[in-house]
Length: 242
Image 1 (cartoon, rainbow, N blue to C red):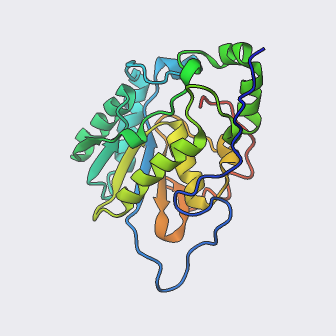
Image 2: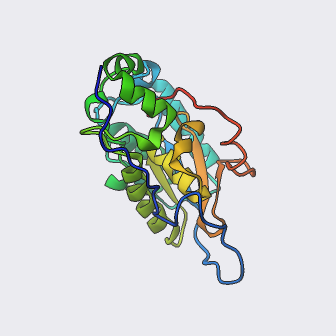
């Protein structure tokens, strides 16, 4: 049996405001922010194998490249003028494909990198469950409370990603942030004022995109009008990696 992490965090991230405890902004003094687009990289072989790829240098698949073509088409009228991308190769490759289609320059940003998973990197979901049964069970039930040596916490991921989203919202033209499941999920939860304990309740497939409107404290899926606020509570914990 693996030891349970000794340091279980109780606090929630407060990158924009105390998560889960702030009111939605309203009134004439609410600052106007540029829309921020976030997208998950294209499919990889590790995604097909339910493997935690971490910081591996594997490329995206042919299907992943097709997903990026479709994403670029959906972003054609978004006004995205720049793409900030995770430094991890699969995200950079995805960003380059979308950037070429949109004519938008690419800028690497470490704040968008994959969550560090320490000893879990390179393992499949089943292997993690066998090797770290207690920690894996906690991760599935209360993901915001897991602290494991060498593994980044959700609080840490949320703090760095919130900084990138804030900077992007202050640009004159919309920015696309190309990233991974974990950074996108925590960014959406933070934007909506939801606790990180609901991390597993947001599905984010390869090539999926979301739009964050900080001036309205809202987030929605790309091409949809309904807030993700309505989707998250109605869905149960899902099994995608990270």
